Each structure stands twice: as structure tokens, then as C-alpha cells.
Image (cartoon, rainbow, N blue to C red; front, side):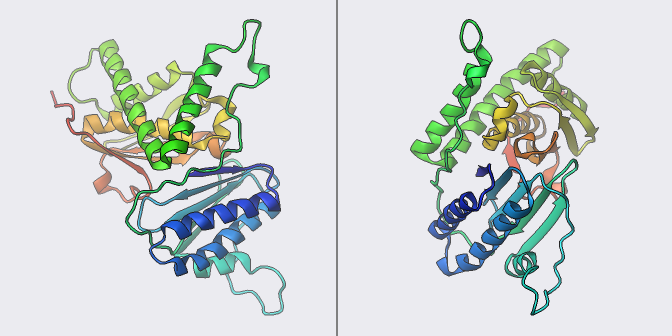
Length: 319
């Protein structure tokens, strides 16, 4: 789940802290484990509000055994001091305390500006499905400035339609059902685009990594994305993107990035049997560009944890 905190006020951080704590308590195997996690959440949000000076993006991913909290901002880069603070010091305890209470803590500067702080929370989830819709604070519908002499153009309408359909599923059936729906739709659309690519290139049999990357770039260009290959090998494809098809709306609805993941993952899995997609950098969370890594041989890699995994029931046969 993703949240945007803009403007980053103490009140907004407090409300999000309460929401995250409630979510963890509802789904933790032992509610007593949540206390330390609440301190981690409070400290990371407070630090971001104090130092970011701009919007903050917060995500919570619980696809592995423990939840991972990520806080991203556009503030000045910093090097964390995790040494124990002096007893008399009134400040400097936040990140040190987080490092003691979290299972893992990573702080890194983003390539352009800003920081990414990631903490693995020491909370074990009981076996269940999650039905916790995130807050809806941003109106994704077209702005009046987008309207022309004849009203809103088709692109604005379709963009709003996709966002609102996803929200409707979330509100009615929960975020798990919404993600499943987005993944299924994306995979289906990706399959149709792959068929079109094959016809245009007269390709049969499995696509090579170079052809898969070419397919990605072609289909994203068709919807006004600006993807380009960074590196291609037998085990992975890394792509950058300078322009999001959803425009500025994606910064208010970061969950839309799952569409890219499912389209890319579905195509790769059909041609390789399985794949993992990692959304390393995203325009949706303040990065200047997107960076997507598609692992074509995930069992041989060490980065598949936390990514979106895709498998093909009926992979394309080799020539």
C-alpha cells in the first residue's frame, strides 16, 4: 500500500501513524510485537516531516514474513549517524532508536535528490487475507485545466476511469482484491500487446531478452511512456523511463505502478516460465525517472525478495 503526505505536516504524519499502527495490530500474530514497530513508524515519519521540506511518500509491503516500511522524500541527502547518542543530548536519538528496534534499516540517497529510508518491522503476520483500504485523499479525476472546447479529452477520461475502477474494487473488496484485479488486467493487456509485437516483427517461439525489452519499449511508447533499455542480459532486463503515461496523477496514486509490473511480468513469464519485477525507482514517489528491473531467472538471483513474482501456466514453446 502507498500513501502520499503532502503537505507534510505533523497532523498528517500523526494520522498516517495511527492508520499504519491499526493495520499492524489487526493483522499481527502477536499484538505485543507492534509496540516497537509503532516507535519506528513515528520516528521515521517525524524525521521526514522535519527535514524533507516537501512531499513524502510512504509504502508498507508485507509480501514476505515481515513488513517493510519505506519513507521517501525530496529533501537534502544525509548520512545517518547510528552511534548511541550522548546521555545529555536532547537530539540525535531517532535513527539510532530505529536501528535498535527494526530488524533491518537502510538509508540511501536517491539518484537525483531526496532519500529513501527502509525499515523491516519486527512484526509477524498471522495467516489471513488483508482487507484494509488505504486512505483516499486525492481526487484522481481530470482537472478543469485539462478540458478543451469540447470537454475533457479521451485520455483524461480513460486515466480517471482506470484509477476509479481500482479504487472501487479496493473499497468494496479490499486492497488484495484490487491488486489481483490490476495484475490480471495488466497481464491480459500485456499478452495482447505481445501478440501485436510478434505480428509486427514476424516472431514465433520464445522471445529473446532483447526482443522482450524491445516489446516493452514499443508498448509503453504506444501509450505515451518513454521507456528505454539500460542493460539487457540473459538473466535480467533493466529499463528506465522518462515520462509516465498517467502524467502527474501517478504521484498521487503510486499503486498505478502495479500495472507496469504486471504487463512486464506477464510477458517475461510467458517467455521464460517465471519472472520477478522490481520497481527500483518510480516517478510516482518523486524519483526523476522510473527504473524497472525484470529478473528472467529469479531463482539464480539475490534480489527477488520484495518484487512481484509472475509464473506462466502455459509458457511459449521454444522454436
